[in-house]
Image (spheres, rainbow, N blue to C red):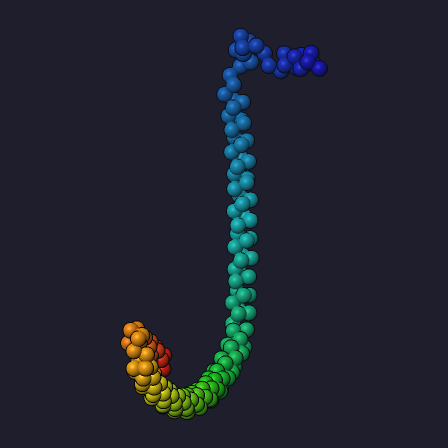
Length: 197
């Protein structure tokens, strides 16, 4: 196959040293250029014809669309106006109903707040009364506790004094009395701190 290519090459293209025998190549070049220009002119002419046909078709389509739009626009505008009227009408009705609903809800909330305030006031009064009663009860219990302890203290003092006079030999009887008195005072102070009004 390579031999065939070499043979074809030798037959179609002469070596560079023999080109002068072929003649002037300008005529061939001019012929090829003229043919290329003619093809370009033909393509441009066809393109111009196609553009004219397209422009005519576009114009017909535009006229048809304008005519169709003109006819349908009137009916569509009427339909849009009807829809807008319905929206406005129902919008006003919805707004009125929503306002009534919110007013009713506000009234319910206000009544609930009033009831809660009344309940809170009643509960506060009851709590104040209970606290006052408990305070009075604790005060009276504290007073009775104080009186009771004072009575006990007096009894202890008298018994200590009487026992110290009986047992003169015991030198620590006074010490015991002081200790008992201090214990009772501490006990009273502790009770007072717990049940203080």
